Image 1: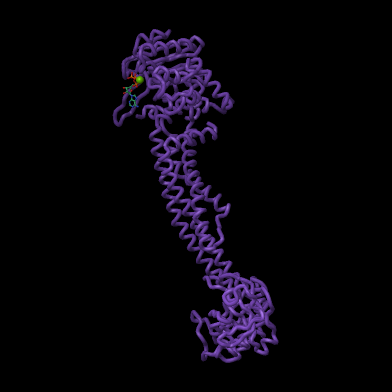
Image 2: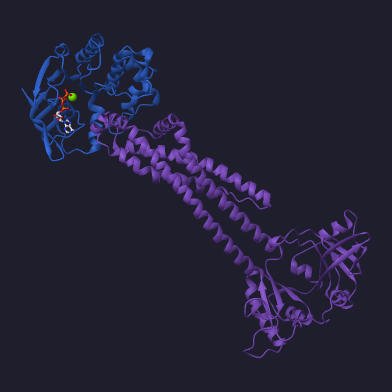
Length: 407
Length: 226
Ligand SMILES: Nc1ncnc2c1ncn2[C@@H]1O[C@H](COP(=O)(O)OP(=O)(O)OP(=O)(O)O)[C@@H](O)[C@H]1O
Ligand SMILES: [Mg+2]
């Protein structure tokens, strides 16, 4: 019997038992939808996290004072930070794999402009900060080395701060008060969006590190909270790390055998760790979701066995008029595949839209790719073949006389 | 010789007990014959017919169809023989329910492909089935389902189905068993006509009224020919 005809016969048999067919399909629909949704949401979330981390700059190394030898950061002798702006300069000059370095001094506080106030973080950095962070100005200019040297009270503000304090007005050339210190705004950064874990990268004020250190922080003038380094590329991160370690150990006069008094973390490492965790989670959820697909498959097998039994006489008759075993096998196999296939299509639609809704709600990229759709469809057809084979095989092995006599 | 049976035996095994249904049946049937097989209930008529129609295999003995050995052929080969050489007509019609008369008649055509290269297009198959229904006076019933047809009409649909592949042999197991006298006579007239066209007809019946349509009578008792 031709395949087209077999398909027609299968469809008609399924339509004849509409409710039964739909209920059986439901098992597959739920299974496929669950798998598709879980995988798409998982992948979407992973990509989102990766994007957020790489928006910080994907080849960034962060150097913190204190050693990380016993897990977590703990400070070495005294509470004094061991990193200095001179360390930053040394790294820039001596390490081949470094594109830009900026020290970082953190402060925070109330910012006031006229009758408006806003609480934000203030980061003291050097002019190379924009290059390190791969960031640009929307308007105005960034401060220069001489302004750092002079500890000028100038600053550049992020998009969120600009919006909160100035709304549509241009902030450039205006003076704001940070912790009651007047700072002149000389530039506004372009919007960068939220980083990993949802913190708003645009809710910040950037100023020369010397000014932040002197006017906004009570720490000693010549120490910084952090060094921010960007490697020449992702590939050179490891090399840069090794170089920086030896440069800093030398500068800090650490003898062999002692712990580093600083620790280096790179964003690629964080991305890798988070991606690995997210992938594992997605896999786990997908496995759980596949169990419902398995249950759907068993449902198909069950209903096909019933169908074969019900149609025993029909099978006998078909054999009497010349159907071969493979004709009967194919007839029931195609029926099971059509059940699973149609279920698969609806499952893909439902799972895809669920993923889409979740993604839209969370502002994630949607990741129901054509590839995963095709795989899901083939998978559901495979479920049909796998669970449909046994009933179909039983049908094809029937003895024609016994089948014809079946009541 | 069209059909040659040589010392055919068939023994059914039910648990420990052996039931001999056929005990050494030898029989030759020539092309174009019209044979009626008569016998009491349980004498082995259906068993004999199933073996002739290669639906079943004998326990022992030799069966030659068109002078070719049948025993030992594969399931597939037997299916092809049923498709091309044999047309079955059953007492209980055995039409596919909820399927039109036309499609019931077409059914053997769907399984007739390959070997003889007899591959008709869908339209040709339908045309052929319609012609066959017309010959049996059922043109206006082509799209009716079995449940919408009388017993006699259903049996005529079954005969159309048996004849659609132009087999040399028609095997009918009590074809009039479920029909009234008038319908029975109509059915027998149909068989008579096709026999005149050269088709070999082998018919099982209890009734001598029916048996007298045949030109040769075979009696069977306890699995043996008399
Ligand atoms: N599948 C089977 N298993 C066991 N015994 C069987 C089987 N089929 C038939 N028999 C036995 O074989 C014998 C012949 O049966 P068969 O059906 O050929 O009789 P029959 O002549 O066609 O009878 P009827 O006129 O009632 O149809 C009977 O004794 C029957 O009980
Ligand atoms: Mg019988």
